[in-house]
Image 1 (cartoon, rainbow over the protein chains, first blue to last red):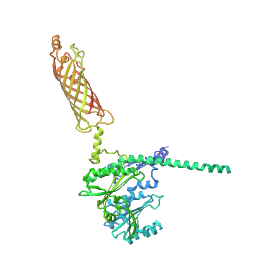
Image 2: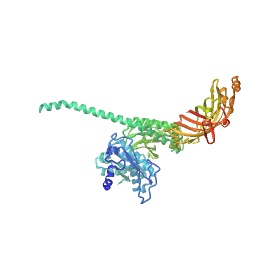
Image 3: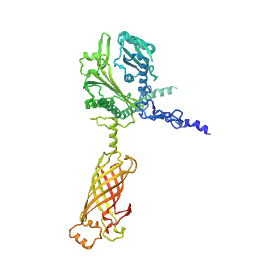
Length: 209
Length: 396
């Protein structure tokens, strides 16, 4: 009997706010939860988090901060909402990955370009990535490289996998991207997807992150 | 079959109209929801802007006052442009009121306008701030830097990002900053003309909630009832109740109000009966918790002392010996008796939100311990407690 109850407990009363018998998925989705880490406290979570227990200690506890989102569900496009909800974390990760990929480019000037079906989200992605790069101590420019009309006609007819390396080569070829410039491109490849991918363009060479 | 087809064709416009009505109603409902959310988020966004400007006053970007163009303010996706205008006005107001940020906002219509430029490389459609070379051709030299602000709702957090770009062909970003707060954080009450840190604002906010500073002025009405002689077994003339109106200063060393002291002056008058003056000092300690409660009544215990002088026909009772007929006659001749004495008191004080308090106390008059005119309510700590007092206090 005890074994059955023990097996059923996580299903009947799952950890808050996970959905279960007494909490629907809609209710669970109405909250945004974030684990407050002791070793890496987020500037958005509490600054005082108790020291974790010693290894081997029986009782372990987590501090999970759950709050309702600022913008209720269904007010924005669901895919946009997912991207915007994690904008800070994602752009920081992309900036950190780009910086770690090419540490020798520390002294170069970094430019940022973003591609998303929603132009408002493009501006958000670009702004957040620029700030994230600045936090790494990099020189960042607000400049945007441009292509000629002929180049755009060719590039936009290519699949994304080939279009971005081709555009990178043309940026270097036309001088729009100078020798000491590095372009970090953030791309949402599919309007229905929420995944972001990044690439670095430097001296006409394209590298996917 | 034909009749059914005709019926379907006849109903199609009605179905289409109904669908349009549903779409319109849904759109209206979404717009109302967006407006509601924007109004809720607005104060938090203002707080972030205040925090940003306060940070700039503490660590200015520029060493000297520098002209800056407010190039763009963007708000959370889906929350409309009304909030954008409000936020832009608030930011401009905060920057103008705080010249120690060294940011001088300048007007640059060409910077924010969309301009078209045709050259050998083609025709470029861009905003002025995105093409500083074009701005130079247009003769704009008022702004050397551009300030961009972006506010976005990211899950449960509202995040503000700011950057300053130098308007040269290379357009380097010279400064950037990111601030985040939870939308559930109550708005800080800050004076817009003098921004301060979040900690200071919170301390002021709590002080305001506690509704008083270190000094408060009470207005108190008290009634002192003196024990009749039957309590003492005597047969003298008892003292009437004394009504005092009192005011003075009440001091507390810290906002928690765990300890209180008060210094009060009072005056009593009943025409044809008595008049009186008194001075009183008390020390009180909160008994229900370690700090004053915002939501529940607070109970204080206090001890203190008072000095009184009373005169008038009714003051004749404040004598140790039993009144004689001669004394009563003499008093009636117009030579009113006057008595001055000191008291020691202790009691309880129940307060509601620092607005109104009810207290009661027992008081002993050492100089009247053997009075044949005033009895005592009880023996306690080896003293006779002859007076029972009740008070109602209002604070301002």
